[in-house]
Length: 403
Image (cartoon, rainbow, N blue to C red; front, top):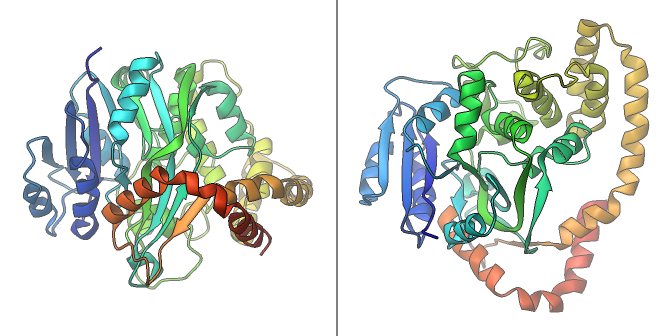
């Protein structure tokens, strides 16, 4: 079987400082049947120069010609992909590990699934840490499994799993173009939500039966000063517009009418609320499925509110009023579950922490996403030494979980 065609899309806007190294993690892939699309959302910085300087015939540069919302830029980027093959989207401060596309191709050739989701490393850029070095976390698990899409979507809706476990079209998510064509034929576009990565996870899970989940990380989630996700859930007040605020103000797809915005007009600081918003926006993909599960979802949103419990509590009261729900009863149930969850989840949290190898210090500086990708590959290649570190990892994991 010949190598499957893979297209890597990097949507970007005004981020030439991080784009260069992100793009390098893709052009460095030892994979032949590869297209690379940089979709520039009308940048005024050196973005185009950065792309041209890559001097790689596989790289195609497209400019939107006017400022678009994130979802519309991603839609624009996908419109420039060839009809066949597979596609993935990475952020302009994210990256791919060395050899990742070859490994994806092997999974594609050995299975008949239409979507693949992989575990990811995490990297905090120096611009986020405020230091001269970044911080890298590398999952140590390997292997892959076949998952039932509807089952895992149900787990996510109940708060038992995160949306990143689903077959999303974002960093570490690879999807056959036929799936995206199916989405577009049913709804008129690939995206119907202002949160494109979350929407893709819910929508794709709604129309495919199964997917591959790889425990081996093949991509890196980068978090920099530009990251919309990081700024959306930050707790600090800032006088100027954050990336998330700018993203929310730029002609985006309206938030679903059943979910109110916060009092200041911002989106609720809850990933679970984003999941439910995408679930409602993708209603037409599930036929006769039960859709208005407002009480159940409010309970899960409150239960998983974390450090944003006060803000989400205020938002939750407004949500309850909007739909005639008894907020106090739902809050009481969520609080009880939150307490129980905090205890019963300790073993799994320790296990997760033990399976992450962290590095990054003045002595071991990791200055950008490309260096992070190289370091992650070295760590993965030297995992036999992990056995010697189990006691240290266990002690570190316990401290991290219980602090």
